[in-house]
Image (cartoon, rainbow, N blue to C red; front, side, top):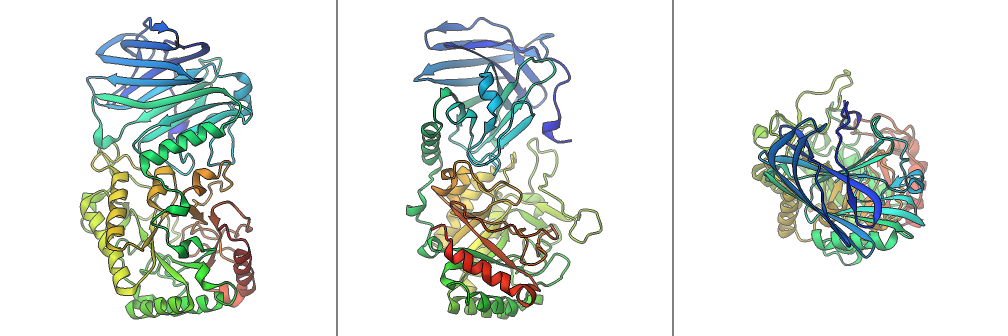
Length: 538
């Protein structure tokens, strides 16, 4: 059962406290490693523009008081913006703090919730949840209402930590309850938790100014630079109009393209788009896709070192740039004996955390040897750096793609985002011109990776495209179907018809090549190349 399907089966009876100058009310819950708690009823100090509360804990449901610490909350109203500053102290380590809001205007709730990075909106009549950091909530800012009449909720967190927005109308409440949870890093969990500033701008006539203020905070906090002036974006990437996915070897050993066949595909594509405007992306180049992870050398069945070197020469002579794929996390335990030192752990360090467990061989059961490792663990990070560096130094590849790094893990042993940052810094130190790309994107991740794949299945029609395009570019996912029936090549999705090409701000089209693409669907491939050349998102 997923988190969103669970809830309390009783009324927690949280005391409700006022905000300065309005009908809105709020409550707080605190969650430790052993239990959840509400606040004791108390009389806050209220003066013009400020509410201050200091109180102790009660068990959820208010059946008893708990002598375990205090919670201090300040709510201030300044220039039409309510801000919450919350500090919780408890005798047990604190794993989350929740702010609950009631009383947002019905007209806004009826119009629905929306985040800037998605075209979807959520009615207050449905139960829904957004989690940051993820491509579904790429920055912790959200609006409720029409753009001409909305309330705007955001978190000003200088670090990358998990935040959850949950909206529901439980049976014990006559109105929707808006929950905003702050989850501190498990690697820094303590008995005191200071929640980053939570802001609510009510009755806004336009969200643009508030969103831009939020983005300026994010820029300062995470070092985001405008796309036009990023030092990690070479001119060739700014001119790229198409990403070409050259599928190599499937997990089972099935070969879609050898290195010579990839070179043949590039020669064909060069007839239909300027190769200087195309980036060739290579998944499954290392041999059996995911099975060989994290051992990264050119696959023997595809042509080995010699064949790969010839592919690089062919690509560069034509004018293409090459981007092999590496697993940012993925590993086969049989290929990396030290996996237990680096494997992702759950936030209490009780068990191994998995992203997924694909059925690579179609026996209708997930494979048993796939795990996910944390690049913040020094040994695995060094392994990734050396593996990528070897390919750059020996063969001269132009870019490296890191799979699955758009996922966030709250690993208690190593802060995962800190590991991403150290990995990127070391690779840029060794190879200043190397382009690094990621699967998935969110605000702070875009500060590290100027190019990302838009996760397959995630809405690409961004409501406020500048949350991405001001800083970075995306391209289509590895699993977008290839011309013809839509084979997803080395990916586990099987067949998915390729979506029609549509211009999207900051989004580079992608086309994949499998074993039958040139022979049976060359005309479609050529047309896609010509469309991309004419519709570049420069």
